[in-house]
Length: 339
Image (tube, rainbow, N blue to C red; front, side):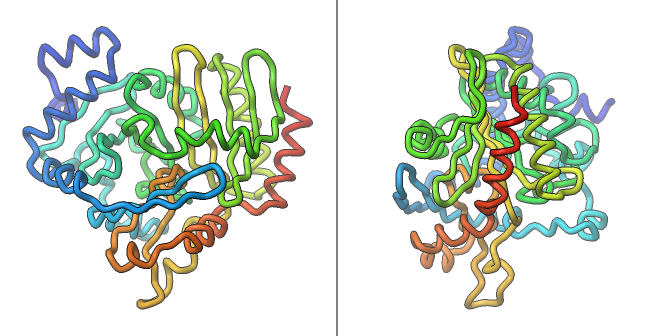
């Protein structure tokens, strides 16, 4: 308990914001405080302002490639059982850098600035307990956190087998709202590719195949309805994919006071493309996680950034996304079972 007390940022301003439930402003306050007090973090965010990007347009959406050397540790993280067992958990509070401070959000989570950013303001929201990365047991909290931070931030989740660099510790990420291209592109994707499998005055669930990604979109104004639909989707997907505790998925979650929640669920067939495992010069250190699928493809190596083109992006996205046959089978099953 003493260690927890030391890690939480505490002053009159932050306590006032938290008491008024204004967590988006509290996150801003934490971010600026850490920029002032933590040199390592400040240097990395200064570097992010100058990263080079290049953009590629597809049918109804855009992908941006970001050269970001600071992400090499996360991109190349060893997440096999042996590697996880033989390293300290970097999300447990006793292992955090001494300069790092956080905000307690809800009862069980701490909001931390991510010192290795992809987004202009990038946070990690981790459980105070060391428990496995599992969305089904914490989905309700994920929705509530989305709402709490919604004025300024989007929440994302990486599954333990497809993007989470700490699959042994429950955590989400939050980042600058509307920074990922898919947040602007999703309406056009609906117009062009949407197949509705559930719709009434409170909820719409759609399947979208944009040629590169297979995703399920849930839009709802009622938390209980979206939870119920997600549980059914999760169960059907796990059964059809013959997965273990959790099928391969990534999630982007936003909230609007008028329209409610919008959940983008990416369905996966594999964690990393084959080029990730090749030897140089054929190796490409690209490991698509949720932010990549959201349209910000991270390239930690200069040589890979130079080589990436539209055809390569098409190839790796199709390789890691769920196959068409399984996607259609899940859609058919859910259309018959969702209320």
